[in-house]
Image (tube, rainbow, N blue to C red; front, side, top):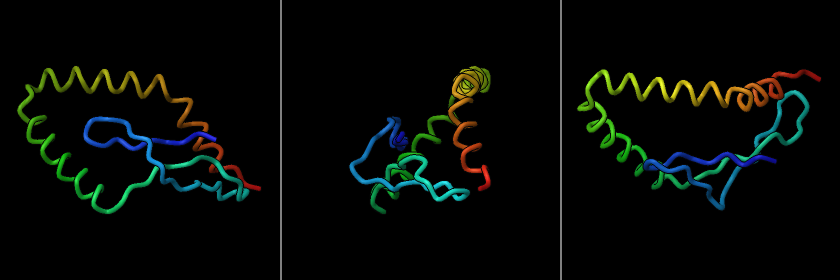
Length: 92
């Protein structure tokens, strides 16, 4: 079963603590999602706010290039997301 990491302070992070994601259609385990404590969530929000202050200083053309690269990567990984969505939508 795949374990999905968290994106914290610029890094994908796998934690020891996780929740099993259940397919609502059949009640079967679908994946695991890493979890963190509230203090880690609060720190992640602070880090994101700081990162945004830097991001908004990046010229628009450069931000556009980076967003296109992100879109390309998301398109490359599209099948992963579709598999999860389809499994969650299958009715019994």
